[in-house]
Picture 1: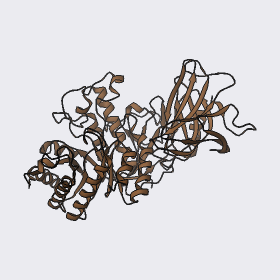
Picture 2: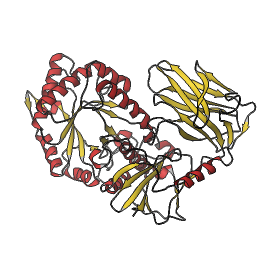
Picture 3: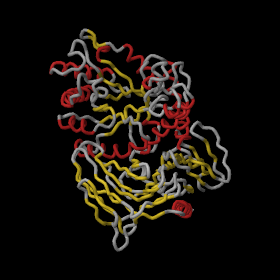
Picture 4: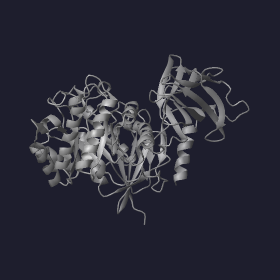
Length: 564
């Protein structure tokens, strides 16, 4: 059935396709050239032969394979470009499509949740054409400002009438391997809090399914005139322990008696290390982990300017001090805003190391685009620090007022803005689970203010009155559904932009299915007897065993009876 479903998808996608290149004829790269010092040759393709674009790029710049047709091609206004591609995660890719109005850039990724190795996969890019197709380029550029050398392979380039597809989900479909330790969702999911003494808020976080909280343990609040005070921190710790939850403490920020905003002098660094050692000794054996500082790679938290060597000295001293007091606890360095590989490389080169490296993968793009960056991060950490050093996501969320709000004509209190937060938030949780991150912290449990047009104030799952926002309902639905199910793998062969995660329970197989393809209509077919619910846990009406999978609706849950 999987094969038939896949063939149905392939036939529908290729019915009225215009073949641009398959690179198998006697003159395989006729009409193609390489730009900006790249070279274009023929090599192994997805089937038969394909094109190989070799690049040698400095810290910036681009290279492209450019195709110019002998005459322009009539194209549908809402058509799509299809190609097979293989590339390393070090490059960002884009299709540059020329038409009667000029050239439009369409970014796409070679690395996905199902295929983090960057092996061959089909990409379908929805287009908005004006008139006729006049040119096409496949462009590559460094993902980070570094010198890179390699190749992008591509094959079977076609122009489709539409990006819309039909796909049949088979409960026995082949699965991609599950990352080590990724079987269950709950142990990895935490939530950031600011008000550490609000019992009702903490109870709501616990009831949702979060297993730990992340909170600041401010140096200046703990150490006063040489004396340590843990009264407030002890209250939170006790509240968490009463609920069977843990705490990820952020040891952060300066002290007026030890260098001010940032401890730089050796004596101030030593004082911070002593504070870290005292904290670890106080909480030893009480289900805690630590993170050294918060976002030291931005001016706001490491004024006046970030300095990797300064941070590395602080982190090195603090990690050693914590392990002296509690050898069994785990300590993360970094806490980096976004996935800042160049800054991390400088930290490591200056001697910074811990049990984990923590990042905050905020982005305006889809959550699933983190796959390539995390692959590169894993490669760097393994090469420089060893395979046993973990990658932690200690802060990431989407606000109900964010980059998308203008397009929605929405604000942080609007139904449209809050639904968008719920869709992206649920996909974020599924993404970090699929990638096997052992620590994943949602930011934030509660809105930090009342201004509906200030993004920083609208990251909460709860509003200021502790009422549920749709994002809380969506995450609670996911966590409760996942509580007694095990992640069995991602369906390996899916249409571009579609993801299907299989969760195995005692009496059922549940598939979480969603689309990140904003401008395509995916018709999802499945066998009879399957129940379907939306991201808020509401039942969906199913006609003829088929649903439309819309990116704007977020994940849906399909429950199959367990095989006998």
